[in-house]
Length: 237
Ligand code: GRF
Image (cartoon, rainbow, N blue to C red; front, top):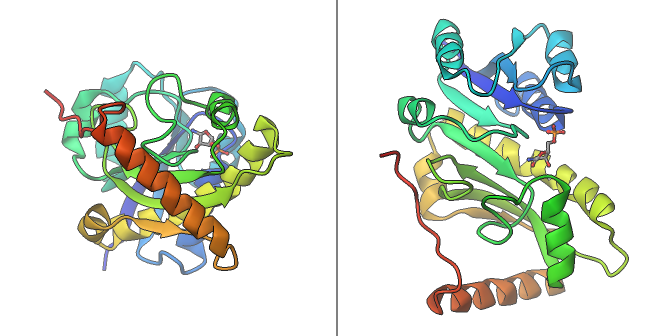
């Protein structure tokens, strides 16, 4: 059986890339391989990680959609993972790989997502808001920013002592777990089930956490009904 070829797009350290590579190599996702790593930035550590695993890697300017499409085709890419890729993909790429592109976001979408919510800013906003829970979301990429269907979320408590920096570190560990679950579903053709019922990973010892998270979801759903937020899948026109 031929392997499902993944392209992973990065802009930085590539710890999420590493989680995906490890999952394909340690038997968690045996039917896929990372066939291509593309960085929007030069000399980032993620490129070294790819090199170490013998994976074709390159820097492609974030505006050079033609080159990106050529490389995806040349490497017979079946699905794309955005793993800390600090760029909005061009509609041509999203249309060509419709429903086969996954992004990892460092918050519980639809909270703290959209334009301006990237990097440390996400965690600063989480702390400023006073929410008690945060986490990570793997979702389908559509033509909006962080608007595609959620697939897997992972939840962790925010502690009163948290700084944005240590929250970022703790969330990053959750991102790795969440992303691997979503990539496995993509590779094994099970995304539709997750779109219908997204998975939420919580620490089973944190019973209060589960309740608190449920309360936050209720508040969010009330806010949605009040029209404070809009969630919509964004088709590529
Ligand atoms: C992650 O927090 C990701 O969610 C964000 O950028 C960071 C990338 O980390 N968008 P890494 O490059 O995977 O280590």
